[in-house]
Amino acid sequence: MKEEIVKLNVSDISDFPKHPFKINNDLNYEELKESIKENGILVPAIVRQKEDGNYEMISGHRRKKICEENGIEQIPCIIKNISDDEAVIMMVDSNLQRDKILPSEKAQAYKMKLDALNHQGKTLSPLGTKSSSVDEINDSKSQIYRYVRLTYLIPELLQLVDDTVLKDKRAVLTMGIRPAVELSYLTKDQQEMVYEEISYEDLTPSHVQAKRIRTLAENNELDSDKLESIFLEPKPNQQKRISFNEERIRKVLPKDLKDYKIEDFIIKAIENYSKTLALERGDSNDLEI
Image (tube, rainbow, N blue to C red; front, side):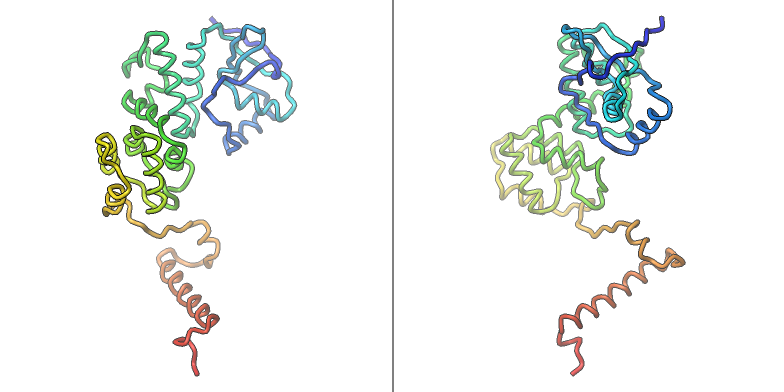
């Protein structure tokens, strides 16, 4: 049976409470905005009616915002008659189909869904069954529970995990989900101690190191000295290195320079620039008297 699509006033629709997904003005958002300007809203939003007669958005927050920004007063919607828990589950499943989702967004979304399932006396469906939802297909059960553990991290540590998606991992400090999960079992004070060490050493712990930190914390043996000794251990996959933005470098290189000659060109350019700086400083070994 085809569901009825109705037009509702945008002003009558409120955002979903504690909606975990941010609306970013990224390329996808701009493309959606242009599409709506040219063709209108092709995919109806999903809402449910509240006790006061107004509506609550379940899926369509970006479309609603674009309407507000462009003075579009009405939006096509499908109205669902569902409970609070059913609304949470539908909101999470529909939004997890986005192209780019931060670990912190997934973490909060999965936590909301698991809480809703617990209220209903249900658990995550086995993978591969007809009852499996979109998010359960994309992420295994164990991975879902890892994401939920991220909600126990202090904001500074959680940001390091988000930066694996937001930034170039070669240029900034980031932390993977598995070590972050281990650190999520630490108290707030212990996590702050770890973050202070991360900032000082400009390093994040490996999964193995994070497990050792967790063990020390659980045995009430974690202190700054032990943390420092763990962080100073050499890690082949996380040695400090110099990273460059290839796009910025190519903009200043000669257009006809072959790729295999780039390294020599940059080294010679640095050598010449270093000599110029030395002359400007008046270094004695670079001056002829």
